[in-house]
Image 1: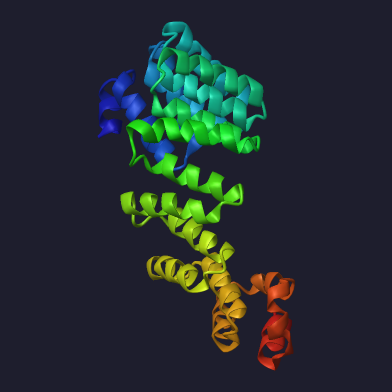
Image 2: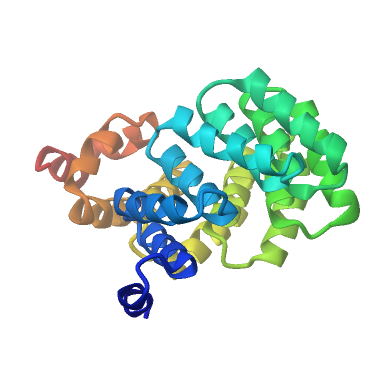
Amino acid sequence: CFDKLLEINSKHINALYQKDFVLFLLGKLKESIQFFDKALSNEPNHIDSLMQKGIVLRKLGNFDDSLSCFEYILKLNSKNISAICNIGITQCENGQYDDAINILQKGIRIEPLNNQLHLCLGNVYNLLGKYDESIKHCEKILLYDPHHFDALLLKGKLLMKSGKSNESIEYFEKAIFVNPHNIEALHLIAKAYELLCMHDKSLKYLDLILQKDPHNITMMYEKSRILIQQGAVNNALQIVRQIVKSKPNYAHVLSNDYLFDDLKNIPQFRTLISMN
């Protein structure tokens, strides 16, 4: 329907923007840029087109032009929080961590309770290894929005990275309650239980993932590693067969993993590895 509107009026700003956005969602990033440029040639101050163009340019690795889009939005409206967040994200991805922190803190001075800003800042501090600072921003979100999925997940990750896997489980469980089908949350809680040597519980969550995605090679691999730690060598070998059958080039990963040393004495395992 967007194409029909554009046939009638090639400068129809909403049709151009919507077509851009559809191309963006389909992953056709370079094609979408052309339509964003057409939309902006007709209406240079169209905020949505500027925003999406900046995001596409960032995904394409063109950080300078991406920043120019967001900075132009701030010239039009200095309090546009989405533009501030996107500048912070872009600077962070470009390794400009101090600049990212500064712009995000500026945004927080404008809107002290904005979840998006606190989450972005928490992610920057996480990348810098400043876990305590990152946790503070998660807690500010959770104080007013205790079911905020991304904040729960990030705090759980930070606690696990800080060697507090037992504490991280509470936040992963809360995140799973909010979004029971999220693969990342299920994987993280499985990893936390593995670190605590609670292998049965770890397997429970890996099995939940494999029920949803039976051909997830990474989860199959992790399940086989835990089975080996439990001494269930035959069960692990059965999964190894499935892995190598689905993805033959994964054999070298298995052969180099010290946990698979117990399997290397089994002829069937050596055959599977040597065949690939």
